[in-house]
Length: 218
Image (tube, rainbow, N blue to C red; front, top):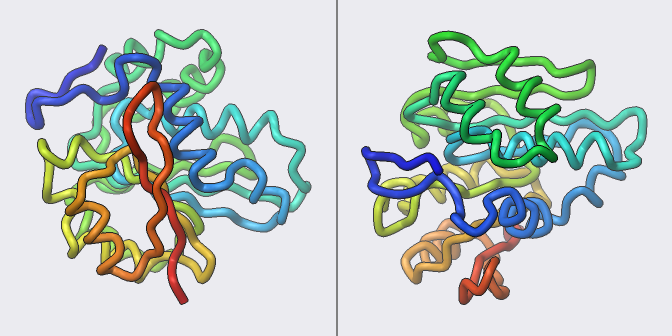
């Protein structure tokens, strides 16, 4: 169970991080159904961590009956990228993700820095942008169709949930773009609303009271 000494928090839900990813991030963003439209779909993520969210997304992408024109670009913003062996160990908990874990670790560099750009096939690309999230999001030329807001708990890492970051996300979200997060703290909800997102709530995963999801307001 990987634990961050920098933020004093676990990297994912102790009940079942993979199932929480599917419930919060994929279902919360209407995935995989939105991939049926074809074309390029860009996912943005705050906090790459162990790569769990990417691997679960890739697993569902491969299983979904999508158009031949569909392409996936998963872009994650990570301040402290993990080493290959740590990623492999953390993801070893889920045999369901063995193929995706092996594909990720086989491509992962010895010393991740800058932008780690990895191609998985002609239709799937992963970019892990190493460094401070807000500056890298603001510098991005991309518009994102869906956001996975998966920083450490707001009480442990409030800067990741600041109004400045939420405004940067909003400015880099496509017209009908969405977000989802396990977090439901009041200041997170208010910052998302203040940035221009419509914010909805629903029951959280594994007995958690609430999670947040929503869309970019026109």
